[in-house]
Length: 115
Image 1: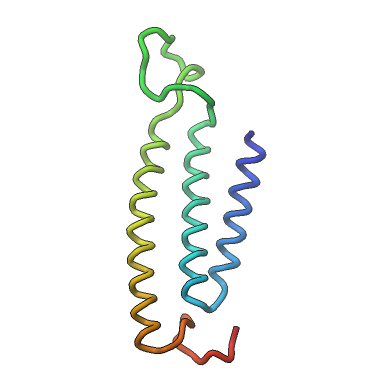
Image 2 (image 1 turned 45 degrees about the vertical axis):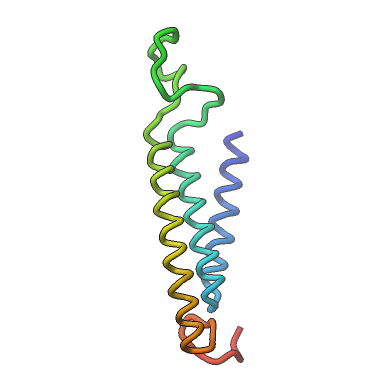
C-alpha cells in the first residue's frame, strides 16, 4: 500500500509540475491544484498509513501507537483542503478577469502564437 501511495504522490507531483511549466493560466491553476493534492497526500502518509485504526482514544483499546492513527496529519490535511479550495477559487477569478481584459490566457498576457 505504501508503494502505491508513493507512486500516486510522484505521479501527482510530476503532472502538477509539468502543467505549471506551461504558459497557460488554466494549466497553471490545474498544476497548482494537483501539486497541492500531492502535498496533502504526502502529509497524510507521514502520519503512518493505518487501515481501520481510530484517531480518537477508545478505552477498550490499549493506548499504544500500534492501535491508533495519528489525528494530527488528518487535521492538517483537512485544513489544507479548505484553504486549497479557497485559493483555487481566487486564482480562477483572477485568471478569468485577466482573460477578459487581455483576451489571452497566457500567463504573461502575450499573443496566441506560443504554446
